[in-house]
Image (cartoon, rainbow, N blue to C red; front, side):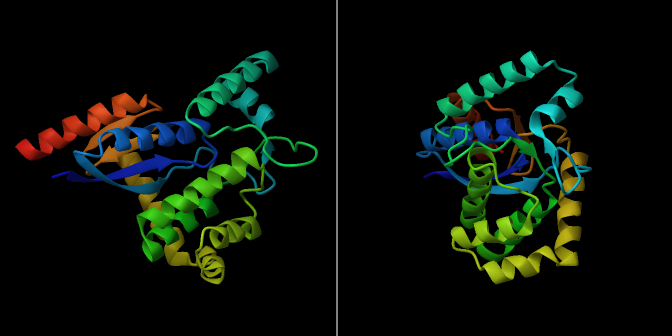
Length: 226
């Protein structure tokens, strides 16, 4: 009989390592599926909470944030592209026509809709929305601070677009997201991706699938022995 587990993933849509880490974790959970039954919930973490609505060029933002040269930024991007290809989710431009610039956006509205999706539809539908957001940002270069874009993504994965738009103006939902952000920080989440299993076991970073599988099995054994 498999051991049920709830895994809260603290993540931001802007974070490519969150995408890579999620795909690796998903494969790790599949490898351990005979022994563990994982329910994933996405939790809010803003990499750039002060980002203005018009966003910023990714290369410019990274160069300033990490004090890197253009060549160093290009090398970082190549490393990320290789890692993303390895987990089956390329982060290169997948659209038609001229490639738009890669941007960084304010993601608070993304987190509001993810929180709404979890409450209104459950973990599986929330994950579908999260993956649609990853695809929209990394492959389609869409404006993730544009509410029309976000509502459209909700509709694309089968969620009620009208209710999604209303959720964006819900003050109680905003407070709930802020509270979850604070809960993450107070619980020791300082970087993403961070995977918190059953509210007490923390796994960090974009590890290999086998490492995630091994960790889940170890946690299952510890839970059984408790």
